[in-house]
Amino acid sequence: MNYDYSAYYVLLSLVLFTIGTVGFIVRKNAIVAFMCLELMLNAANIAFVALSRRVGNLDGEIAVFFVMAVAAAEAAVGLAIVIALFRNLETTESSDAMELRL
Amino acid sequence: MPLVFVILSALLIASAVGVILFRNPIHSALCLVVNLVGVACVFAALEAHFLAVVQVIVYAGAIMVLVVFVLMLLNSKTEERTLSGVIQLVLSGIIGGCLVSVVGPFIIEQWPIVAREEPPISGSVEALGKVLYTDYIFPFETAGFLVMAALVAAAMLAKTKGGDPNHPRISEGKNDGTIQAGGEQ
Image (tube, rainbow over all chains, first blue to last red; front, side, top):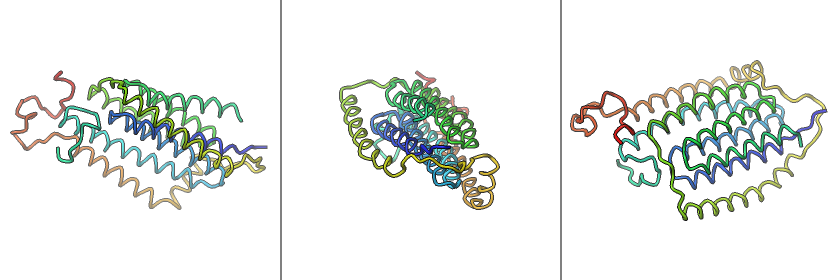
């Protein structure tokens, strides 16, 4: 007999997502903010996998696969932006980048 | 509540809190590695074996190497802990706690714990590959194009301005394609 604990996993995903959101708001360093973004994506992935198992088809796991692809693309572009920011302003703090035009 | 869930959730929450509380970005990144491996363990516990492996390879391998590399390249300093920062942290923590305590009961209510007779679906490579290459072949190809475009965009963003001799970095005569970061302090 298997028990389905998907609600607990969704709850865990909610907690992790909230922690990621709080970190994204609080931290000033752009790279740490980016890491908090990864936390939020992973929290969503946990919910996807848990509910995919609950519903009984693989669509949720496919969604996680695409989230990972998008996260990889986002990591490349985001870190390139941070490097460009550092090269122009000598800082990685997101609050120092106040002008659109560098 | 299964033991594996308790252990994994404790590990995940502790490392996630570590990411946002450590002031040194390198410590945050190491906490994030623990968190990502923990998420891979959650996938394995949910019998999504392929995703667990991909999580370790893509996230804990590729993305975190990139993040740590950029952190060391840019020589990020430890953040100062100011009073307003602590107030922000406490306030947003309270708001986050409220969010969890409001939404949480709905989740428990929505998906109650049930016993199920049939074995749950398996996220093996075979099963996932079959769905990915039949029903989801077009999104799969699109994701390939997206990653390609992101790669080109990242190269364009990170490259130095080559054609402008009056650019301060180039006129110094030090720029041989590498990014000037942290080396001048």
